[in-house]
Structure formats: structure tokens, C-alpha cells
Image (cartoon, rainbow, N blue to C red):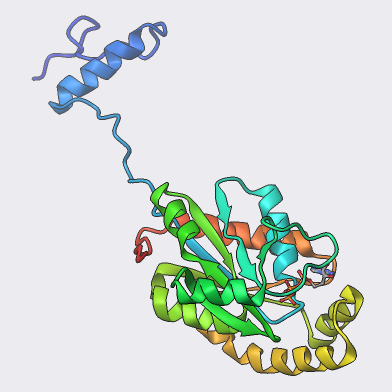
Length: 242
Ligand SMILES: Nc1ncnc2c1ncn2[C@@H]1O[C@H](COP(=O)(O)OP(=O)(O)OP(=O)(O)O)[C@@H](O)[C@H]1O
């Protein structure tokens, strides 16, 4: 018959004993397991993400990104170069790099852009340098592109990028938003609305869709944040292609 354990013969310190016994308990556990406990990270740090935010004109891409900038740390927002004229409240170098058409074309010639497109008569493109520098530091980056830009990026990035399609809750909400912004003429509005109808067909090429409903900007921003968090927690991380 097995000997009953007595206090002295038990290999582990009593759980009731004072706090000083925790190291003793750890050592006893290690000794019983025959190996010491490692302090190494159980999971390696997640890969930096390239988050591509796109959607038809007027859905609120800039508004979402502006707010995301305020509420989330450790995101690098790539500043797009554009040949369009600066809007009231926009800051050169922060919202966009505002350049002339000639300057833009010179960047294209020197192969300095990851992607570029003509959007409503103006050029928009993403400087490669910023992306490389950022990824090298392990930072996540956010790119804001129009639908044609997203298509080009999908071809070059494949599944290594996280593609988010922003929409308004309805077509009428989108039109009202564009009218309220007051930055387009009636003719320009017609082009944007017709284009938006076509662009909606591209939603299936994206990984996520985020509805930016009227006066619900916070909800949309929160959802984008959750997407980023979920991507960071993925077991199978997206590969880095850049
Ligand atoms: N959730 C929202 N509720 C009401 N108005 C909004 C909301 N989100 C954005 N807006 C407003 O809608 C207008 C269009 O938004 P924004 O300029 O961000 O769109 P965009 O998708 O970046 O457009 P573009 O592609 O033409 O630059 C702006 O006046 C903005 O303040």
C-alpha cells in the first residue's frame, strides 16, 4: 500500500504558504517536468500589413482615414501624390502631395510610383519610397486609392494586401453627400454618380466591405480598426511582397 504523503515528503510547496513560495513552486514544477519555462514569445510578431482603402467617390474614404489617423496608433498613412487642386482645409504633405501635372509625369518617368491613375482628369499615385521605408521598420501602412488604383494594386500585391471597400448605405445617401461637399459642378457630379454605379460592381474583388452610413462615421472607423486587429491575429499571416 502506498505511503500517505506527509508535508515533508511532498515535492511541491503548500499552496497556502506565503508569497515567497511562488519561485519555489515554479522551480518544483520545472524540476518535475524536467525542463525550465521559457520566456520567449509564443507567437512571432505579426507581419506588417498593407491596408488598401478604396470605394466610389464621395463614400467618405478621406473622412474615414482622417478619423482613423486620430484614433489609431502605429499606422502609417501613405500620402498620395495628386495633380488636383487643393480643397479648403487640406494640407499639402499631410492630406496629399499636391504637385503639378508636369511634376507628376516626371515621377512616372522615373518609376517612383507603386501605382498611379488618372482620376476625373487628375493624376493620383503612390510614392514607392514611403512604402519601402515603412515596411522595413515593421509598420502597417494604409493606402487610399480609387477603384482603378485598387485593381492595379491587387495585381501587384495579390493577397498580401488587405483590401477594404467603403460604401455609403445607399445611392441617395452618396449623392446627397457629394452635393453637400460642394466641390463638384453638376456635370462633374453626373460623371461621379455614373462611375460610382459601375464601381459598385467591383466590391467582390475586395476582402472586406465597410458601410459608412450617414453620421455613423465612428462605426465605420471602428469596423476598419476591428478588421486590422483581426488581420493581426490571423494564424496564417499575409505574405509580404514588397
Ligand atoms: N458618415 C458620414 N456621414 C455624413 N457625411 C459624411 C460621412 N462620411 C463622410 N462624409 C462627408 O461626405 C463627403 C465626402 O466624403 P470624402 O471627401 O471623405 O469622400 P471620398 O470617398 O474621399 O471622396 P473622393 O473620392 O471624391 O475624394 C465629405 O463632405 C464628408 O465630410
